[in-house]
Amino acid sequence: MKGLLLLTISCFVGIQCNSPHGGNPHGGQLLIWELTDKLWTLGDLDHNGFLTLAELEKEFITNFDHDGSGCVVSHEFVHQWQHNYLDTHQASVHVFEHFDMNRNGAICHDDIAALFTATDHTKDNLLEKDEFDNLLLFVSINHLDYKLI
Image 1 (cartoon, one colour):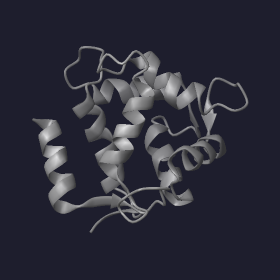
Image 2 (tube, one colour):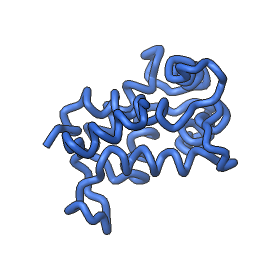
Image 3 (cartoon, one colour):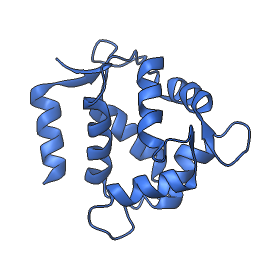
Image 4 (cartoon, helix red, strand yellow):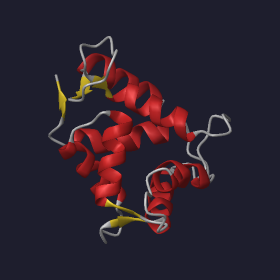
């Protein structure tokens, strides 16, 4: 049901993010559902249709932690997010701020665990696609670089 709601909002309201995306058939703008699908595909390492806490940490800590500290600071996150998703600096900072749950300037295990727990509405220790979509939809509609058109 939540997935249907997201799809309905995306299709009829037209949520898009102002990001160049090479080869995108939508005139260079990455639709929010395309971003969530890309993140989901990269994150679901075992392709079982769910994200575990370990998979979420792999995507957002291991892959973004350039100095090997175990945490991702703003410049690491912003650089990697812009590189991976061709997003603007401002939008990348915004996503970092949402993922830095304890507001200490770094995304660490505790942040990802808190984000995971807050997003896992079924409380089964697995993120379903619609739970993940709703998280990113919330982040996107609360930022200036993501607009309704």
